[in-house]
Every structure is written in structure tokens, then in C-alpha cells.
Image (cartoon, rainbow, N blue to C red; front, side, top):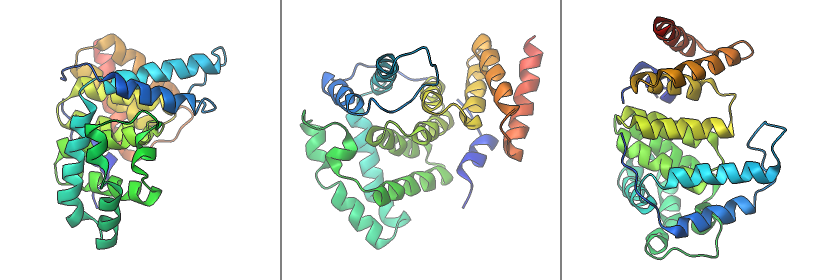
Length: 250
């Protein structure tokens, strides 16, 4: 199988319209975060837990407002129904379809008494793995829009997992949605800033968007991280390439 992250490093491109999201989804986010206030998403010791949660709440709300969430969910479900049958085992596909059997009802009539979509759809960890597998296969077959839709669904099910935001960012970047990719990479880094991948891809996006100040600032963070964190060969190559571009701006 083609390595998802490596392939993204070898091929990257680049706009997104922003629409407002139904207040119902804001309420769902608030409930989820209020029930998980013990999660430490930030390393700043001068911020109280309440401030940290408030910031993350604002961040996730911003992501959900990019487009109507139901559109992404419906798109992801269609892909999972059609391609999931081919890309997963018979048992995995059956379990996944059972898990999503009542999803359309929720999309049409959001409920107010549940904290997040994983709770709403009662999705098991093994089923999350199956969804991720399908998303990666979509990416490896060049279906970047479908891959992005599935990872956006995964970020909805578990907004606290940085890797889902990261991979949503990679597929958005491959779909020429740089502004959207930037938001996803930044969210991934808010959750887990020790992963070099989002730093490097974020620099690449900023350079393509001609946001040179942001690119230099992000590169400084990546350079500092590189002093304590070992990189694989592909990451090193990308780091050096970006370093040359940053130096050319000086």
C-alpha cells in the first residue's frame, strides 16, 4: 500500500467558501467539550483549563462553519456505502452499515441530548479503523475529495484526535483547498504540536498563498522542533526544500 503521508509529500497543490453552520452543531460541540474539560490540549501553563476549552471550542466551531456539516457527512456516507463494500471485508462492511443505519435520520433531525457524533452513531473503535482504511484507499486512488469528506466525518466523530485533522488537511491540500487545509493543519497542531508533518505542510500552504510572514514564523517552529525530534528521510527532504524557499525570501 502506498504510504499516505509520503505520497502527500511528493504531490501537493492548492480556496474555500465560508458559510454559517446551524446553531445545533454549536450546541453539540459545547456539550462535548464541557464533558471533556480534563483534556489538556494546550501546553501554555498561564492559561486556565476554562480558557483552554474556550479556545478549542472556538477553533472547532470555526472548522464546522466552513460548510454545512451535513453535506460532508452525506458525501462521506455515500462513499462508504459505495466504495466501502470494495475496500473492506464483508464483515467490516456489514458492521459499518449497521452502525450508520440511522445516520440519515440524525442528519435530517439533529438531536439535542447527545454530546458528539460517535455517541450518536455508536461507532466502535474497529469501525473507526475501517472508515480510516477506506479514506486512505480513496486517497491512494486519487479520490482526494472523497478522502477529505471521510476525514471530516472522522473529525466530527472524534474532534480530539489530531491525526484526523492532519489527514483532512492533506486531502484538502491535494484538492486545491489551501485555506481549508491551513485551518485543518492548525487544528491538528493545537491538539498535538509535536508532529512535524502538519508544520511542514502548513509552511508549504502559506508559501503557496503568499503569506510569507506566516510561513517564516511556522518554519521557525518547525526548525526548533527538528532540533529535538528525529525526522524520516521524506520529511528531511521536504524540510530542506522549504528551508531553501524561506531563505530566498530574506
